[in-house]
Length: 487
Image (cartoon, rainbow, N blue to C red; front, side, top):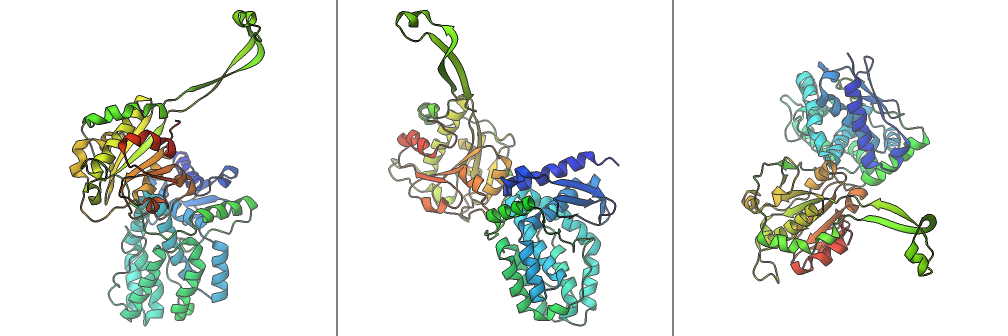
């Protein structure tokens, strides 16, 4: 079978992952993918060559792209972990290899899903393939064990794959588990690796084995085909640098998951009447210009300049054309936005934010730029065509002002969907921040705070925060925030 197409897709995905987490070093290396009959599952030889199996638990990898992507994401996650320090801890604390592998797999998949929400489904598909093929084996292994120590390996793998939508499940134990109290406590402890920062993995593994010292002598369970392996440690200087850069960006992040943007259809609807008038003063901030300079050179003879005794030889040199603005406008529609905005003659925060967002959208679009509208509260949505229709008035009732709080975790998905766009978030306050914020993503994100708001709450995920006290000052605010503007 010709695997060229799927290999191209997998290599592109792998290199895109590293381009996000290690944007500087990745320019010097290249990730390759090989599909081999000799590979039992995804593994790597330490040279950033990722080996993919031809079949994984009865599924042809070349014919099942979600499984292939899931295996790839699983394997790449290990490059975002301090493997050298982990190996040292394993040796010094006598931690069984299988036990640390389960913990690393839980943390690694959680980390990848936090940075790249689009990998959630492929990873779930991969876990489901293992569940369908192996869950009964794990259940039987637990039921046949004489005590908790004998059951621990199969118990850990049962937790890994019992609920494929999650990297780990700890809310129950399989039937027939010996010492169910210890079993449940063990599962709960492994579940903490779903939120563990990568940089804290050595300490977390030490704490795990100190809590369950009896597991130093447990039998090795049957892992999914080859998943008990880990990539070899990078020996090349560049690859070690790539891993250090990635860990520097993601290693300190406590993981709390992410949220995907939802897609809703929106019928065309006119913007607020005042938005058009407000947009006129904003257009100069987004209008592209052709830079031009002139130098003294024998380019052409200027007769009038010669009469005035001005040096007559000029050469006109075109400069760079400023690219059209690409902007994502995120409009907060949470419950608190229904309150009155101070200094707005009784208008709600929602009305002020929506009017500002629509004016900005019109200014960008009429200047030849592109605008993506996103509306969020306890979830976020945009339109199928990634246009500005989400900012239209008739949609406000469908946003879901449920009072369950504001979440900014959709930003992780948004950053990956629109890697070339500036991002401007119009909001009034705090909410659940993204788990992992890459510096480059934070630098292209700004927050326009609607009073009374909390600018400092937006600091973890935005480079600039400005309070909009009056819509008449929106142009001045845009000059400060400069999300692609050139005022």
